[in-house]
Image 1 (cartoon, rainbow, N blue to C red):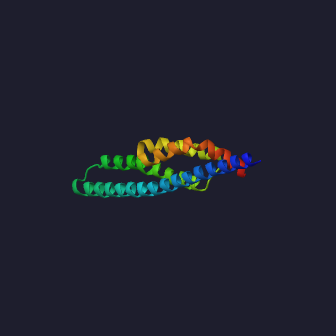
Image 2 (cartoon, one colour; image 1 turned 30 degrees about the vertical axis):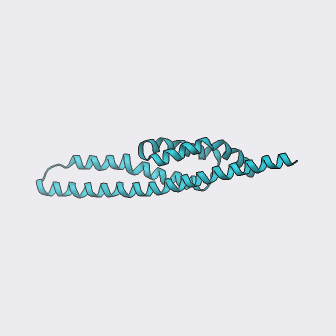
Image 3 (cartoon, rainbow, N blue to C red; image 1 turned 180 degrees about the horizontal axis):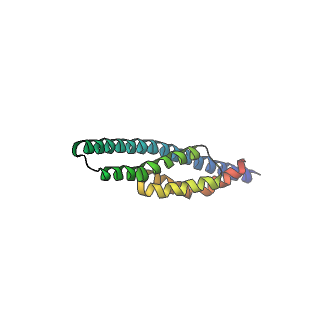
Length: 139
């Protein structure tokens, strides 16, 4: 009986540790997502001002600035919006399949956008089995 109680306590400890790491990953995703969206919108704003100034000065087409603004939106703002959404789901301790999908997608986005988010995603992938077992035991 004592051995079973110790095993259950260690499993509960592993679940709590993986859940706390997942919450930290979620908070970091939210913070980096907010800062990335802010910087992306700032870049788009600066490019918009530049394109209007270019059009006003030379009465010419400012397609390069418009294209750079669209690329900034696609490659910078949208992935950081995703980081905010995934961070909210990771902080809430969602079901294990949903959580695992967000962790893997955070790893992919993190490799291209933010190495800290990628490092936390790798640590969460390693501990995802503990989270899954603990989530089944508490549900």
